[in-house]
Image 1: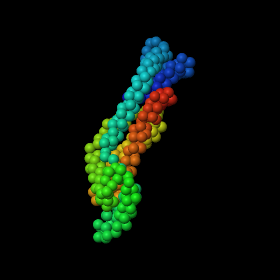
Image 2 (image 1 turned 90 degrees about the vertical axis):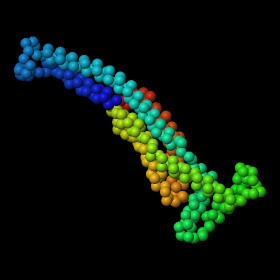
Image 3 (image 1 turned 45 degrees about the vertical axis):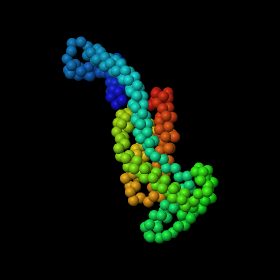
Image 4 (image 1 turned 135 degrees about the horizontal axis):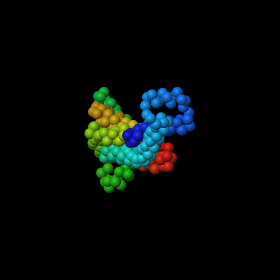
Length: 282
């Protein structure tokens, strides 16, 4: 894409320069002194004007043909490069689809407060059970929902159910944190390579920087970095904070996927195929 871009630019410059020289000679805009000076530089027997006119016309024609071919090749290569980046972006985001999902069925605030209370009691050797009482009261008030799922009405106990809930969330959170730590293995080299291969003729700032970089490339790298950071910092982090950070990341992943792989399927594909882009986005 870059080579075709510079072929077009160089061809355009040659067309302008040689077209200017040909026009200059054709309209006889030169002086006799300029003509004699040219003969001293290139001593030829024929008219110096005809010599330069033929040379400039030859360069002009060659540059026009080369530029025309380069523009056609550039349009094809531009489309292929953008599609390669779209595919690389999709593949990169697919790495996050395999993460375990944390679903908090109970009120989030009650769960976080209960975890916070456990950590506080353990740290300060206290026996405060206010948050535990609140979550037990909520479970008791929604007993019917749990009974319908488990069909164990006679043996239902809010205390037992709470222990089961916390054990389940602990296992899921630990599994997610392990997956986040393994996120270090995710390689963004392909997406980076295809991004840096994008080199528009006139639209690098308008499309590559403002759209592709800000809305797709940088967002996905930031998301990957946030996941890796959370995985590395998870040891010793309060459980309530882990829950909060995991839910934030899950929301961002869902947002990217719901937008069609970070708007690639909608806005990005529209830009590739649209007529204004095909004509002006070069």
